Image (cartoon, rainbow, N blue to C red; front, side):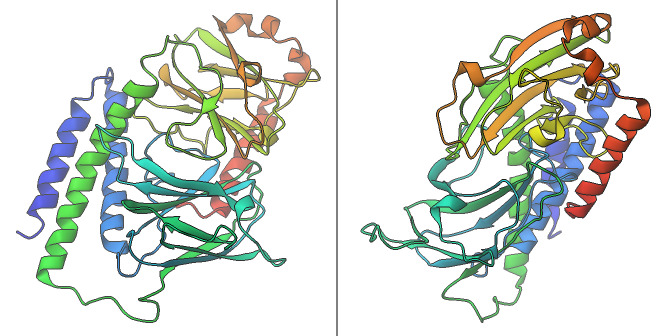
Length: 390
């Protein structure tokens, strides 16, 4: 049958899920099947919604198609490109904290992180008073440096990734569109049996690669670190121009909590999140598994104190593990204008849950009622729905 390659790939991906080394419980396995469903959605969508001759921005990462420790504060858009043609990217700048562009060569695989050809944010382009902009990408080595809003495509350029980052979930989303200069106004070629077969085969190959890649990725950057620690801020691997990150992995029992203390930084975006052992975000819609600065309570001394635990400590900055005693810890700082140092990074202490009140110097002002916390969750649910991330 024409779809056999994709069916075979789904079976291979399912075996990879079932034999993942971190699985300890039935819940771990069920979440793996959910993760697989998201991968199937994402790879089939990418195979059928994208044309190299007529590129379109698509979102391959969202609440129901998670991968790569997706940031709850970020909308991700990607388009397949070639290095030998011209592209026009148009849009309007929203009110979000950051809008960044990155050209990648190659793909994420279980053996390789793609090269970053170009990375910049919207401060590098001209934006009109009404928020509209036009950015051009194309081949060229000897480019006039004074030519604004043009960025050369180096040999091997294969993906354009755009990230729109919310520091406040009520911020207004922008718009973005990509077109090839030489095919705009024309229609793509009609389907053939050969092209349909290729799309199913491409989706299957992408699915298996997606599962293998993101099972391997944490081995490189997280699991080799001492448990229940976090690194000092460092430039994020992968070439993002103005992003620092601090990473780690945790393993706590039901009667333990992690207190994380970090300064409120003088940057437009600072956020923290938990990830499951599938290297994806936890449910950030219906649970408070992430917090950025605007969502966090900042203590009078300028510090943000987060409590990661499975048991509600009754404070505003509770980070829910949602039953995940093990997982990943991640801070991000974006649109930075200076080098971040160890002093900007987090401090971690593992304590018993009944010790939490005595460990927080401003515990009384951190406290929140059950109704107050429920209101925070309702605001998260409404904000995500407003971003139309389905």
